[in-house]
Length: 128
Image (cartoon, rainbow, N blue to C red; front, top):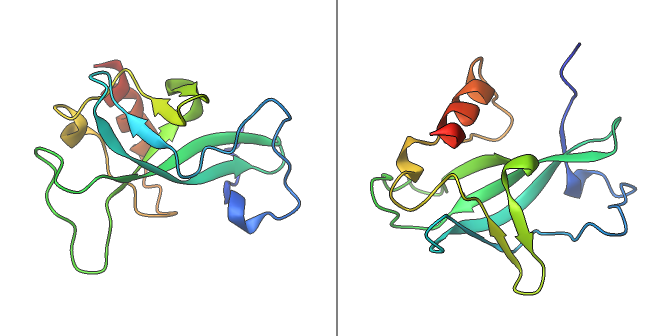
Protein backbone atom coordinates (compact mmCIF):
# COMPACT_ATOMS: atom_id res chain seq x y z
CA UNK A 1 0.00 0.00 0.00
CA UNK A 2 1.41 3.39 -0.93
CA UNK A 3 1.23 6.41 1.30
CA UNK A 4 -1.24 9.04 0.12
CA UNK A 5 0.00 12.37 -1.12
CA UNK A 6 -1.12 14.90 1.45
CA UNK A 7 -2.09 18.45 0.62
CA UNK A 8 -2.87 21.54 2.67
CA UNK A 9 -6.57 22.28 2.80
CA UNK A 10 -5.93 25.87 1.69
CA UNK A 11 -4.43 24.51 -1.55
CA UNK A 12 -7.60 22.57 -2.39
CA UNK A 13 -10.39 25.10 -2.98
CA UNK A 14 -12.81 22.43 -4.21
CA UNK A 15 -12.29 20.13 -1.20
CA UNK A 16 -15.43 19.98 0.93
CA UNK A 17 -15.43 19.03 4.56
CA UNK A 18 -18.01 16.46 5.64
CA UNK A 19 -21.18 18.22 6.84
CA UNK A 20 -20.64 17.10 10.44
CA UNK A 21 -16.90 17.98 10.46
CA UNK A 22 -15.96 21.48 11.62
CA UNK A 23 -13.05 23.40 10.12
CA UNK A 24 -10.78 23.51 13.17
CA UNK A 25 -8.20 25.93 11.79
CA UNK A 26 -7.64 28.63 14.41
CA UNK A 27 -8.85 26.43 17.28
CA UNK A 28 -6.77 26.16 20.44
CA UNK A 29 -5.02 22.83 20.98
CA UNK A 30 -4.95 21.74 24.62
CA UNK A 31 -3.08 18.91 26.27
CA UNK A 32 -4.17 16.42 28.91
CA UNK A 33 -3.66 19.09 31.57
CA UNK A 34 -6.03 21.48 29.76
CA UNK A 35 -3.21 23.94 29.15
CA UNK A 36 -2.79 25.37 25.63
CA UNK A 37 -0.15 23.79 23.41
CA UNK A 38 -0.81 25.89 20.33
CA UNK A 39 -3.27 26.64 17.55
CA UNK A 40 -4.36 24.61 14.55
CA UNK A 41 -2.69 26.34 11.62
CA UNK A 42 -3.68 24.02 8.78
CA UNK A 43 -5.27 20.69 7.91
CA UNK A 44 -3.43 18.10 5.85
CA UNK A 45 -5.80 16.10 3.71
CA UNK A 46 -5.70 13.08 1.46
CA UNK A 47 -7.52 14.45 -1.61
CA UNK A 48 -7.96 10.99 -3.16
CA UNK A 49 -9.43 9.47 0.01
CA UNK A 50 -11.32 12.72 0.77
CA UNK A 51 -10.19 12.68 4.40
CA UNK A 52 -8.40 14.95 6.81
CA UNK A 53 -5.36 13.05 8.08
CA UNK A 54 -3.39 15.52 10.25
CA UNK A 55 -3.68 18.81 12.07
CA UNK A 56 -0.70 21.10 11.54
CA UNK A 57 -0.36 22.86 14.90
CA UNK A 58 1.67 26.00 15.51
CA UNK A 59 3.05 25.59 19.02
CA UNK A 60 2.56 28.32 21.56
CA UNK A 61 5.69 30.33 22.39
CA UNK A 62 7.60 29.59 25.57
CA UNK A 63 6.46 26.02 26.15
CA UNK A 64 8.59 24.35 28.84
CA UNK A 65 11.55 22.48 27.36
CA UNK A 66 10.84 23.55 23.76
CA UNK A 67 13.65 25.77 22.47
CA UNK A 68 12.68 29.07 20.94
CA UNK A 69 12.40 28.93 17.14
CA UNK A 70 14.90 30.76 14.98
CA UNK A 71 14.19 34.15 13.44
CA UNK A 72 11.15 34.26 11.15
CA UNK A 73 10.16 30.72 12.15
CA UNK A 74 7.56 28.98 14.23
CA UNK A 75 7.52 25.53 15.74
CA UNK A 76 4.92 23.19 14.28
CA UNK A 77 3.83 19.64 15.03
CA UNK A 78 1.49 17.27 13.22
CA UNK A 79 -1.26 15.54 15.12
CA UNK A 80 -3.06 12.59 13.58
CA UNK A 81 -6.78 13.29 13.52
CA UNK A 82 -7.38 9.99 15.33
CA UNK A 83 -5.32 11.24 18.32
CA UNK A 84 -7.49 14.27 19.10
CA UNK A 85 -10.93 15.06 20.50
CA UNK A 86 -12.88 18.10 19.33
CA UNK A 87 -14.89 20.44 21.54
CA UNK A 88 -16.90 22.40 18.98
CA UNK A 89 -18.74 24.42 21.63
CA UNK A 90 -15.50 25.99 22.91
CA UNK A 91 -13.44 25.67 19.67
CA UNK A 92 -10.83 23.49 21.37
CA UNK A 93 -8.89 20.46 20.20
CA UNK A 94 -7.79 18.13 23.00
CA UNK A 95 -4.87 15.72 22.70
CA UNK A 96 -4.84 13.65 25.86
CA UNK A 97 -1.51 11.97 25.12
CA UNK A 98 0.40 15.28 25.32
CA UNK A 99 0.83 18.03 27.88
CA UNK A 100 3.02 21.09 28.36
CA UNK A 101 5.37 18.84 30.31
CA UNK A 102 5.93 16.19 27.62
CA UNK A 103 5.49 18.17 24.39
CA UNK A 104 9.26 18.60 24.13
CA UNK A 105 9.58 14.88 23.27
CA UNK A 106 7.17 15.17 20.32
CA UNK A 107 8.80 15.53 16.87
CA UNK A 108 8.71 18.99 15.32
CA UNK A 109 7.28 19.26 11.80
CA UNK A 110 9.00 21.16 9.01
CA UNK A 111 6.33 21.55 6.40
CA UNK A 112 6.37 18.76 3.86
CA UNK A 113 9.65 17.26 4.95
CA UNK A 114 8.39 13.96 6.28
CA UNK A 115 11.60 12.13 6.94
CA UNK A 116 11.73 8.34 7.37
CA UNK A 117 10.62 7.39 10.83
CA UNK A 118 8.59 10.58 11.44
CA UNK A 119 5.24 8.81 11.66
CA UNK A 120 6.71 6.17 13.96
CA UNK A 121 8.12 8.93 16.20
CA UNK A 122 4.65 10.49 16.40
CA UNK A 123 3.05 7.17 17.31
CA UNK A 124 5.66 6.49 20.00
CA UNK A 125 5.27 9.94 21.55
CA UNK A 126 1.47 9.58 21.64
CA UNK A 127 1.65 6.12 23.21
CA UNK A 128 3.86 7.25 26.10
